[in-house]
Length: 129
Image (cartoon, rainbow, N blue to C red; front, side):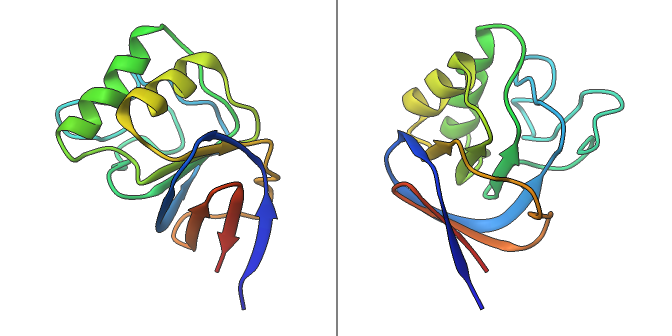
């Protein structure tokens, strides 16, 4: 049975896929390999996992402004997340999602979400299940 959580639209759009969930922030510059789409930050809970095609759920972004370009590069290589869901967006990830055309919402309760569950973003809705 599915249910809906509501957030704030950062980048309008619709996408679905399996969840890839972290309880720690993600930096796209140095934290995600733009050639493979894999998280490479040493010690990160998602280290080694690919962000490609998933609904990437994490509390907030961190790192350099070049991270926005990394998201754009991932999109051009078909390695980007299908959508991004944050508890609280920050400008680096928001700008990256915008220029890459990745649907993004924030101000969503991400508690109880786990990797592998089906998620869909539709406007301000996060459809769980």
